[in-house]
Image (tube, rainbow, N blue to C red; front, side, top):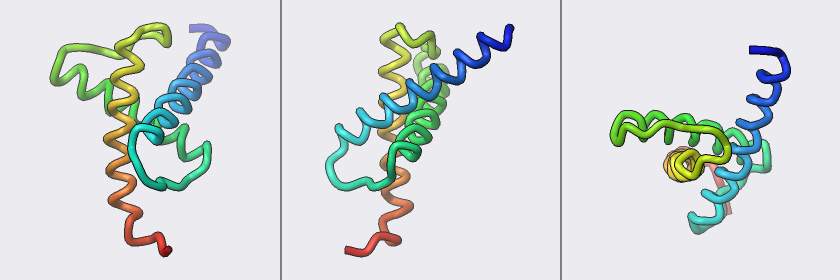
Length: 95
């Protein structure tokens, strides 16, 4: 793998993380907080979780950015991570 492929892979994961995290935040009601960096991290972790669960439960793996299954698994994973994040930070927010 060349350096250029590694850089493009990292950029792809960041884009996937940002979009999947943003869609997850749009789907779930409420104020989740966190800026765009948290959204990227949420999406990347969600993509990893979605890929793991998809592979373990349905024998479906993450593909490239153009693959519909990649987006579905990433968004579902990001929703799960966002729910966990919301439960973990619930007591730390004051309103």
